[in-house]
Length: 505
Ligand code: AMP
Image (tube, rainbow, N blue to C red; front, side, top):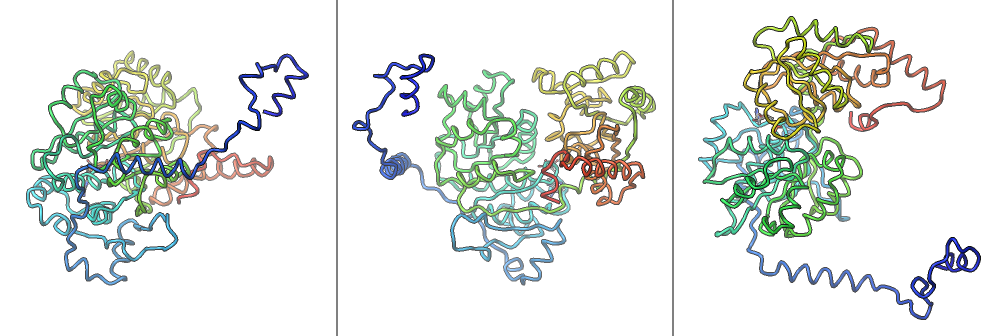
């Protein structure tokens, strides 16, 4: 202000009407932040004073789980993709010893819910996945949890089954949904809905609320009643503002793929939604990575959460997939892919990943002109077209789906035989996601990546993934990686692409 006033005297360009903008020292009253915070806390308490009683602990630990020695626990965690657990410390008194032991059988968590157990048995799973083994006891105990795990690890079921039990245990009438799942994309939201609907538990229903789909249909579905709502943040905000959805009944909140939601700029919308959800709720967050923004979100909205990190699980998909690397020039890519596609067998299904939407459109049209039945999916296509494309490849009506990374997460089609990286992804995590679109549900799969000279910055990370999965590493990839290192040294700059990778592996 002093600066502005000085400017007013000397420079007409900066002149402000003095009466409006200058604050005389006499008028200045410092804000009493302590009082403001106290008021905020009091009004928050008053707001939730009449909320229904919340029960969170539904866990009865089986004796064989409770009696495990520390050595047994460590061995079980180690043999399950090296599960690591910790408290995200928010207080000074560190508490690590109260984290529940992992389980290894479905019955150890769901024996008291035979109807749910029966639903699980229908899926013919042999055992809980690593994230489930550790997350279920934590969540059934009512703790907040951060799961560092990706799509394909069984994470949806990891948070979902405890959510159903939690909902069943709340006082009735429920007057609205108990479970809110926030997901970054429509595809993931629909995917979660599909997963929820595989388990019918005590008549509970789920509805999906996402931008792009018919607002009216979604409102109608919601108004028929649902215990679980699966939403993208924008559309949920829209319907909360329109007073169609009331989130004050939510007691179990899931922020799925939080890193992705922040990447897509949803943080303000998420924060807005959370203002209206009761603060003593149970909160689950999943994220493939652990960047500062996600950490901040966890610190603001979770209560002493337990973090479960499933070490190299991200890479399990890459173990069941044969990963082929082909070195090509940029202008050869189309002919190479065409030659490959013309040799497909009738039962083959291929997803081709492109870096940009326009490129995906172009490639898909070129392939159609060549007589190949192809569909295309990316963020600029209508929701109905995207759903149709997924339905077509799922049913086998088409064999080739061209996609951008919007399709690399959450797409769960069991019988994709090949993934082609027409353009190599921006970072190695995206590579792992894409590769994981094949080799699913116990099947084998093949990924083929076209590498051009300009992809040399990713060579080192790719070598590490290939080696970890016991795949053949072409000599040329080593040469590329060395050339890149030499160039970096010459220029004295770190040119590494996708810097997140190094922190985690
Ligand atoms: P998600 O990580 O939630 O995207 O799950 C990916 C797929 O794994 C889904 O099709 C699930 O039905 C499946 N799945 C979930 N739990 C298990 C399990 N314990 N064993 C085998 N498959 C599972």
